[in-house]
Amino acid sequence: MKKGIFITAEGPDGAGKTTIMKLLGERLEAEGYPVMLTREPGGIEIAEQIRNVILDKSNTKMDARTEALLYAAARRQHLVEKVLPALEKGLIVLCDRFIDSSLAYQGYARGLGVAEVFSINQFAIEGMMPSLTLYFDIESEAGLERINRHKDREVNRLDLENLAFHQKVREGYFQLMKDHSDRIFKIDASKSIEEVYQAAEKKVKEMIHQAD
Ligand SMILES: Nc1ncnc2c1ncn2[C@@H]1O[C@H](COP(=O)(O)OP(=O)(O)OP(=O)(O)O)[C@@H](O)[C@H]1O
Ligand SMILES: Cc1cn([C@H]2C[C@H](O)[C@@H](COP(=O)(O)O)O2)c(=O)[nH]c1=O
Image (cartoon, rainbow, N blue to C red; front, side, top):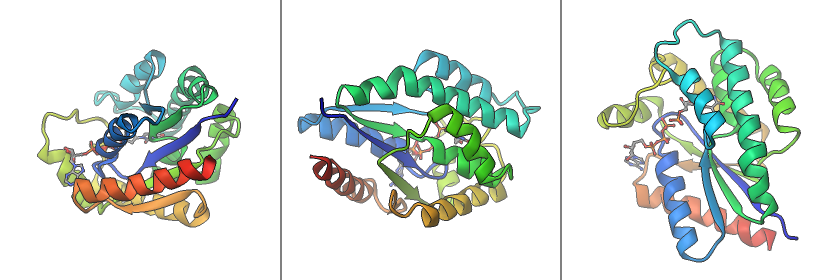
């Protein structure tokens, strides 16, 4: 049986990943593509419970390694319970964040080390990397401004980190793009939603037809 395609979205907070992945899910499905949209941390009950612990604003004592391990644990459960079965069924899995978030946020910005964080994640994912990663790039100030403009969105523990932390996250993604230029595709997320969407759709369709 033909296997599915694993595509992830990455980027700093407020880049617009969720908006664009949702649109991709809706529009590709309307065109008849077999898609499944999901997110990290979360996407299934156990991982959503872990998400609540990680992102709870009152958990100010959380150690950086504990944080990294919790993201990896949520990732493992989500992968085996939802992503792998969908890929087995031949679906195009669109996942809002995956391992690169841990590498950029915990490995680079928190200073745990990209190689160290990759290593604990390797235990969780057993080599299951995405075929394509869309990296939505935006200046940290602009991303945070978008989030703050929409007060109905949850403000989580990571959102409350200072600007310097968010700038380091972006630097981390730049490093990852250099090291994985074959997999990570950069999109200018400062443009309008429709322009960003068109760039993402073009790349995703190229990947789908390459896999045909
Ligand atoms: N291209 C865009 N131009 C202007 N506003 C945008 C654009 N894309 C998304 N937004 C708005 O910015 C806010 C953040 O978008 P979204 O939740 O999709 O970002 P995100 O990258 O998923 O953020 P996070 O990682 O913090 O959850 C939303 O209110 C959304 O409507
Ligand atoms: C998967 C993952 C996520 N994070 C951070 C990134 C965001 O600040 C939050 C998740 O919130 P979102 O609204 O769903 O984007 O968690 C992280 O630090 N490490 C990770 O592995």
